[in-house]
Image (cartoon, rainbow, N blue to C red):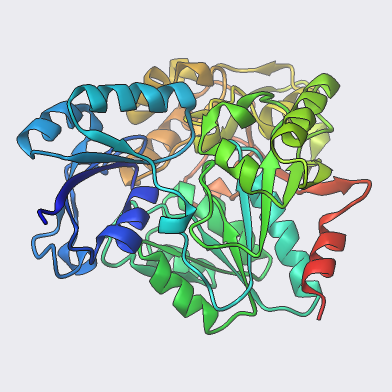
Length: 439
């Protein structure tokens, strides 16, 4: 039987995982190319032969998604696999229509073909959109499990922006490991808070190899999801975070709605800052799609070192980059802190933007008067630094999960905003985790 010629549409995450666990050593398929979007500087590279297996001695080329129709024709593609996340359902179907009109099959892959089974219990934390609050939920879960006496490692959804061979399996135990692996700002935002809490972090490219290494040193594996993707591992307990600041998105984005059906536990986050009607709308959608899941309500209280220093100041607000870009949030914890603690003005950073930051605003115009902490490479980090230092403000308010001053030099005072999950009422994550994993 002639192998099915396959092209995988991705963003250097789910696409590589699907290839590794289903296509890599499968003689029934020939993967002729990946396409890339969302992440800068991914296209124009190759998925390396060292990771691609014996069927691909030359590796697999990665092209920009804008070349999709030409690639289907030139590479004689039989099927296209859609493998990235945090996009509207309508967007997915537009891609499907484009592909099927070109005469080939369009495929989405599910849990049976892509989830890896662990020898240890797995708790997954996923969400319905980027920026819903997975990180603080994951940190809360790790704290509870460690207080119960378990050794835990967080395995983070992939962000492989560098040398893919070197990034096959990455283990982070200290800040020095972040420097050794030349982590981007986006990677540091996810890894540093775990390290601060004494939790080892794994990430990389080959997630079965990552899991097998992590299993050697932990009692429970904690899947720390990215975007609104579903877990790469088969979970024993599935926690899904909902965001009432974006009511309706839980049933309108791919694959966030998949997570709605997979959840054992819903955490409706940010109820302290959301419209009560929006909280009810999100709760109703959760009950309609998955009435058996337990629902927890939570807040994300803000912590600032010196709130009084913000009062009366003209401020530049910096937020987590992915939350503002493909997460489509126009504001975050930094904006809330600036308003709550009496800033005189939140200054529009766009007139001061340089280089790739200008391009980011052009691609994501909804970002508005907030500066996304973009840093997918050294050049973009320097553009971010220049934009901050050009801004005519009294103070910078940074709501990224890391200390940006470790990465860039800022020429004005900065206040960091921190936030942690705080459950409201009962049930709580602690009662659920103790019932599930009590020794």
